[in-house]
Image 1: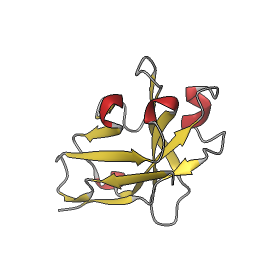
Image 2: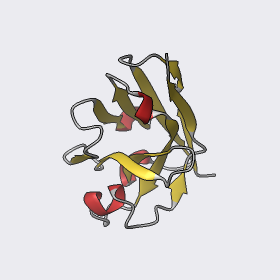
Image 3: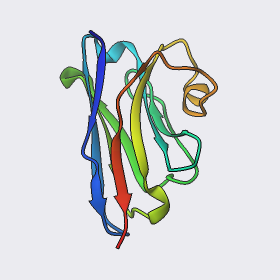
Image 4: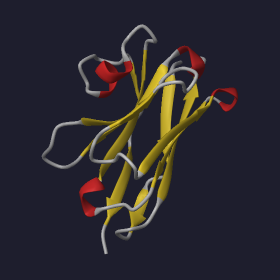
Length: 128
């Protein structure tokens, strides 16, 4: 059974840091591009950051550029999102998704495509 499971969310003060993890099971993670997306209450889901199969290409939304870092460890079937200098507007449910490698990373991350696999999400709340 193909599954993506996010973890690492929680409550953090503004300026703080969190690291999200995405664990894959039932398939080999390095066969897919992986992305992080988020959805805040009352807003549409948006792309945050995406990474190609062997990490040669990364994409970041303007709102997180310079604060978030995406990485992957294919040997462990894991993808990570290191988030620093968190702001209240980063509050959202964060999802990881897997997309076929033939899809351009920018199209994947700007949600032009419909990735076949999604995790269930992890809540990130930035508040004092």
